[in-house]
Length: 116
Image 1 (spheres, rainbow, N blue to C red):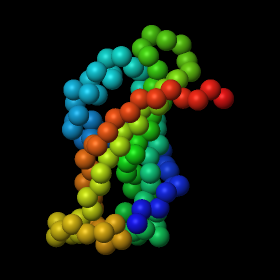
Image 2: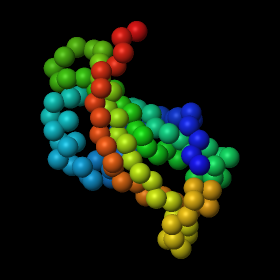
Image 3: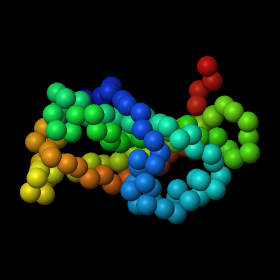
Image 4: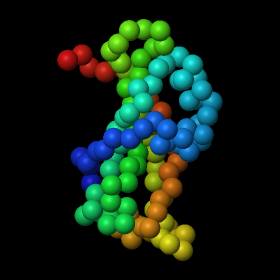
């Protein structure tokens, strides 16, 4: 079971591998939107897996705004993923037994940020 609620920050460049999975989609997004360089993502905590403690995984969230518009960043870019956890031999295992994991992008969403 994956626990919800623990999030940590990361740089957009930290997800370059995921961006390459959907390069055409991200090229279109980057053509139309400015992406704030720091976002947040779900963070694996120590109670789930000691080895992967602190590792970020999807969903990934970044604020964006249409290019050429003034602040604030008025939209959220959400990158949803499916993780496959593996042991040191490369066998698929649960998060608790994992030594590493791979992610596949399953969805990209853009939605307005609620006004405060």
